Length: 161
Image (tube, rainbow, N blue to C red):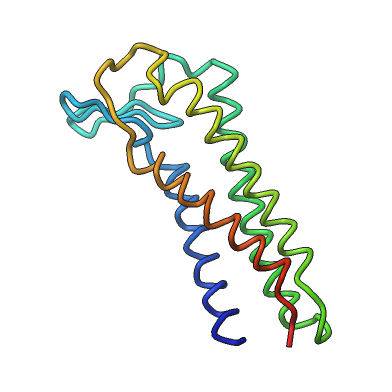
C-alpha cells in the first residue's frame, strides 16, 4: 500500500510539472517550415525570438484556454496539498474523497481547455501556418489529461490503511 501511495504521489508531482511546462512553453503548434512555434501566450520565430504576440490573442477562445489551463494547475496543486494533508491527518479506513474530487476538477479543466484549443486552433483554422504539427506542449496537455483522470479515480478508490 505504501508503494502504491508513493507511486501515485510521484505521478501526481510529475503531472503538476508537466502542466506547468505545457502551459508556459510556447510550443503548442510548430510550423513545418522554419521552426516557428505558437503557444498560448507568444509566437516564436526560428531565431528563438518569442517577443511576438499572437495575432489572435484577443479572441475569447484563446483566453478561455489560458484560463482553464491555469485553473488546472491550481486545482492539481491544491489536490496534491490536500492529499498530503489527508495522508497525515485522516483516520484509517477513510477514502481520499477530497483529493480525488479536486483532481477530477483539474481533469475537467484540462479537458475543456485542451478541447477548445483543439477545436479552434489545432486544425489550423486561423490559417497562419498551413503546414504545421502539434508541439510538445499540446501533447503534454493530453498526457496530463490522462494522468489526472487516473490519479483522481485512484484517490477516490483508495482507503487509508
